Length: 300
Image 1 (cartoon, helix red, strand yellow):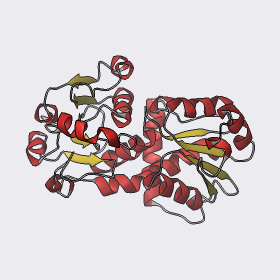
Image 2 (cartoon, helix red, strand yellow; image 1 turned 135 degrees about the horizontal axis):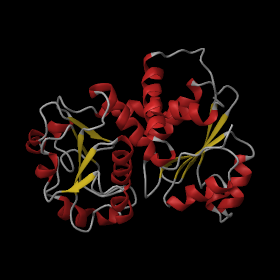
Image 3 (cartoon, helix red, strand yellow; image 1 turned 180 degrees about the horizontal axis):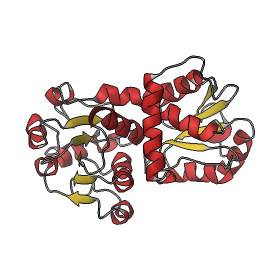
């Protein structure tokens, strides 16, 4: 089997991404304990950043598919003691069947992939969060069907999640409305590569107008806590309120990758409201990643 990595959504074609999302839905709806395509296989999970959803979903996914998962942190390995990444990649990949990394620098994942003999999965970097997008898109497909031709509003920080939404828009052919404060817009390389799919708006209300999906994220991500006060001031007009949701279509969904700061980036009445699908979205990390693990590691 040809070695494949999942570093960004662009590692899948549009057709492959849709097939993977449909497979995730199938795996969710037909849970079979006897289906073990990864029996005897091991996934190394390398965490530089702590996590709830990423660790539980990948570990549970491997177990449900018949395999096992190893949790590795810099405190417990040579990764935090100066060993060159290429050496770590060569050693670790000689002993396991796949590697999932949740790291700070995106270069850490790309370097591992360059020197690994097994598939490497980007569980999150400072630049992208493609696994979360798999779950988000699966959730939309389940509730509303294919997202092609729809319109999505991203409100808030132009961060790693925003970057992956930009990639998803170009691959799955939906329109993306962006409302980000000055100084917090997405990286220009992402914007330039998908300019036909995205539009910028000055306010959250304008961005949400007529949308099928409204998405946001925390104002200060992990590692940005020192910027909290500055970011609260910059983002104070970018909260997803009921007024913002009212500008979207009546049946528009609301998503958030969690954990959420209720009353900050999203109002309590929105996140707990009838349009919110945040817990379906969170659960779908498990099913979307099972489909991904099957694709990359099963040999089929």
